[in-house]
Amino acid sequence: QEGEIKMKVELLEYSQDAVGNIVTAARGCFASNKQATYEENVNLCKALIKNDHSPVEFAWAMFRISGISRACANQINRYRHTSQAQESMRYVDAKGKKFIYPYSCLSVADACQDLVDTCFKFYSRLIKAGVPKEDARYFLPLGTETQLVLALNFRELRHIIKQRLDKGAQWEVRHVAMEIYNICQDKWPWLVSDLEVGK
Image (spheres, one colour):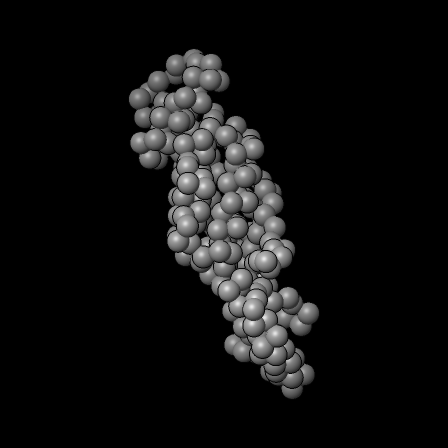
């Protein structure tokens, strides 16, 4: 059985009128003040999404992602068109932090635990010896738990979901992408209605 996932994704802030923002940007390109129903505006948004047009960037969302490994955070940090604030191990003491185990290592978890314990004990020893946290962190495993706040526009949001829900993506970042997708499906179903999740 796969390990227990403690990861959590929370929607913190977002465009209050995402459809309106996108439609206003799109119609501005044509100097159009057309009055339309909400359904017509949603259909326009879907057409813009289908053709990957830039007005989709005028709506945004901000998430808190917690209980992930720094390895997972590093994958999310690769996206250039996002704003991110990650928990800093320069300031935060790693003592008491959890370790995120890859599923593939659970069969040898005892041996992994010994190594992880050694790393954390050595980290604590360095701190007690007066080594700054910013230097002691060099000896922490990449599986050390972290959290980050992620803000991005809807175009990049779709890009991340599509890439990280692919079956070739790493398991932990797939869990993050699925949680983000579920939030979008609940809040803005028109934004992700064309994505073939799980296929």
